[in-house]
Amino acid sequence: MTRARRLARFAPLVLLAILTAAPTAAAQPAKPAAAPPGTSATPAARPARPAAEGCVTCHLEIGDERLAQPAKLFDGDIHKAKGFGCVACHGGDGKSTDLEAMDPAKGYIGKPGRQQVAQVCGRCHSDARFMKQYNPALRVDQVAEYATSVHGRRLRELADPKVATCGSCHPAHSIKPPSDPASSVHPLRVARTCGACHADATTMAGYKIPTDQLAKYTESVHWKTMSAKGDLSAPTCNDCHGNHGAAPPGISWVGNVCGQCHTVMADLFAKSVHARAFRDLGVPGCAACHENHDVQPASTEMLGLGGRAICSTCHEAKSKGGRAALEMRGIIDGLRKERDHASEILERAEQAGMEVSQARFDLNGANDALVKARAAVHAFKVDAVKKEADAGLGIAQKAYERGVRALEELRFRRTGLVVSLVIIVVLIAGLVLKLRQLERRTGSPVKG
Ligand code: HEC
Ligand code: HEC
Ligand code: HEC
Ligand code: HEC
Ligand code: HEC
Ligand code: HEC
Ligand code: HEC
Ligand code: HEC
Ligand code: HEC
Image (tube, rainbow, N blue to C red):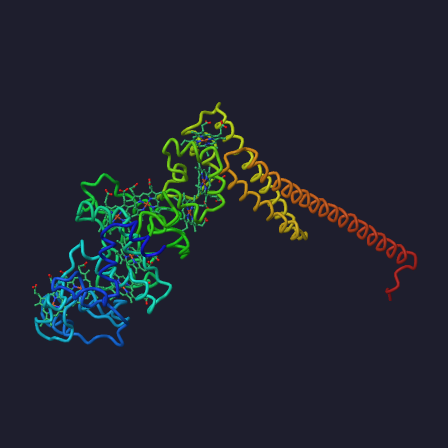
């Protein structure tokens, strides 16, 4: 999107931020003393080396923790690493070593207020040309996106003092890239960062939304996949809600976000009767059956009308939907049973020393079919489930038959073994008898 279009679309906040950021400063009139934040420090080019600033020296010596803390923390900040100092955000005169350093005439803005923060950050982060010098891959839409979020809108329209600003999620003096495990926005830490407000009943008192998102999320299959298995492809808060906006670009409604990862289910669901019916009823898509924060591993028990089934919440047993639910359940359970039978018999054959590895390999096809049949549930058509399951049933039956044959072969071989043993024993016995007979006939040869 071009900057102009973004400007047209988004709020005055963005306009202000981008205008103050514009490095076309030459075309602007001389800046007034009470310039917008940091105008005098408008970055034109990257600093050659970290600025040795009087700000830091004095602030470390003041002996007031509130004033010293930022200077201490700043050592671990990405901006320090990139060569910026305090002036980059606060303005002022970095070369001065006395209080003159904080002269508003030198662009000093003091501690940015909540309404100001996005402008302070956006001065650089909304300026593609400037940011490109550092990292061409970095997005430059954070301020614009933030302005569209519930946080940004409430800040602008209601001056809500509790919503998140840039500094709430990126603590001002220890900002780190999301890839840094110590960053407040590293995937494993985001939930806690959001939870600092959303799970805190005191902060959220007075709002009409629950405070259980963090608690529920940390019980979900998504968090467990991420935290226990270290699989960072599972979603955390910002994957579903957007890093900075209400939802990621292209996703009009956060409820649709599941399909970004679970594409097969989403495609089937989108074409199903439920897609329209749910929209008309205002039922939240996938989350109606899976929850949004407390997503649990899916199981066939969800399907049908009994115990843990979800279909029964809307369908009666006798309705078309109810009957379909039961049928799908029957088909999937049937395939699973056939697969288990086949697997069992092959295992027995294998333990008995029969060679059935090819059949065991082939049985993977039935596993695949089971996965596909379970996914096909999302078409909410019996035929769709049946089609996938039938393919698997064929494979499972063949594998089962191979198991039966292997066991028969084993039985045959065992019988053969017994028969040959009997023959050998009989032969040996006959031989012994014959020897005895010969001995008796020639008398006792060893006497004397
Ligand atoms: C000679 C010591 C000294 C120097 C140099 C100095 N400061 Fe300060 N700074 C102070 C003192 C003292 C205060 C507290 C004064 C107050 O609260 O008004 C302060 C307060 C601040 C505050 C907090 C303002 C608030 O409203 O809470 C910020 C931000 C700040 N300084 C930034 C800077 C920056 C940026 C520089 C360098 C351009 C700088 N300081 C240089 C001594 C200094
Ligand atoms: C990336 C931007 C940025 C840089 C760089 C930065 N600050 Fe700040 N600073 C902020 C913001 C934003 C706040 C407002 C409070 C907040 O959001 O935490 C703030 C607040 C402060 C405060 C007030 C703290 C308080 O608790 O009241 C002081 C003092 C301060 N900064 C000093 C400094 C000093 C000294 C440096 C250099 C070592 C510095 N800042 C560098 C953005 C920055
Ligand atoms: C003076 C310009 C400037 C200002 C002001 C500024 N930043 Fe930055 N910021 C940068 C640059 C340059 C980088 C380094 C980008 C890179 O190399 O990846 C950066 C990096 C970051 C990163 C890490 C990005 C990444 O993935 O590497 C975050 C997060 C960030 N800034 C947040 C903020 C916030 C929040 C504020 C306001 C409190 C702010 N910045 C103010 C210039 C600025
Ligand atoms: C509600 C929390 C939240 C707020 C408010 C917020 N951010 Fe972020 N920000 C995040 C998260 C989470 C990420 C990590 C995204 C990821 O994993 O790539 C992020 C990433 C970033 C990055 C790295 C590049 C990118 O876009 O992924 C920058 C730069 C940044 N934020 C700047 C800002 C600025 C500037 C503001 C204020 C306009 C802001 N953020 C407000 C949560 C927030
Ligand atoms: C500084 C506190 C704070 C932080 C941190 C914070 N939020 Fe919020 N958030 C709020 C407040 C306050 C509201 C307004 C509540 C309302 O909408 O009624 C809000 C609103 C929301 C809403 C809209 C709720 C609705 O339906 O009205 C969503 C979604 C949201 N936040 C997600 C997040 C996510 C995701 C994060 C972390 C990346 C986060 N928030 C971090 C304070 C915070
Ligand atoms: C798997 C996707 C997903 C994840 C992960 C996720 N959310 Fe949500 N969240 C949703 C959906 C879907 C809704 C319902 C939105 C709607 O009705 O428009 C929602 C609703 C919300 C709301 C509105 C109030 C409510 O509870 O309905 C808030 C606030 C919120 N989420 C915060 C968070 C926070 C904080 C986290 C991380 C701890 C998080 N979410 C993680 C998908 C997710
Ligand atoms: C950023 C990608 C992503 C998003 C977005 C996402 N998921 Fe997931 N989901 C995963 C990953 C990764 C797993 C764990 C691996 C697996 O089993 O597929 C998972 C697991 C699941 C499972 C358990 C699957 C099982 O094996 O039983 C369900 C159900 C689920 N997600 C539903 C949802 C719903 C509903 C949403 C939206 C509210 C959603 N997911 C959003 C990536 C995502
Ligand atoms: C009407 C209820 C319903 C809706 C709506 C629904 N699902 Fe499901 N989903 C199920 C049932 C039932 C199962 C379990 C099927 C089984 O295990 O036999 C399931 C299973 C899953 C699984 C696990 C599949 C596996 O192989 O382990 C995922 C992932 C999933 N659904 C994602 C989604 C997504 C994404 C959406 C939205 C696009 C969605 N579901 C909508 C009922 C639903
Ligand atoms: C939130 C309520 C709700 C849930 C839960 C739900 N359905 Fe439905 N279902 C509907 C609505 C509404 C319709 C469309 C109205 C209708 O024709 O009955 C529908 C239609 C259907 C149809 C088509 C019926 C027809 O008349 O052609 C089938 C099949 C179906 N659902 C199966 C299921 C299955 C299987 C489940 C459980 C995995 C399920 N539904 C869960 C609300 C729901």
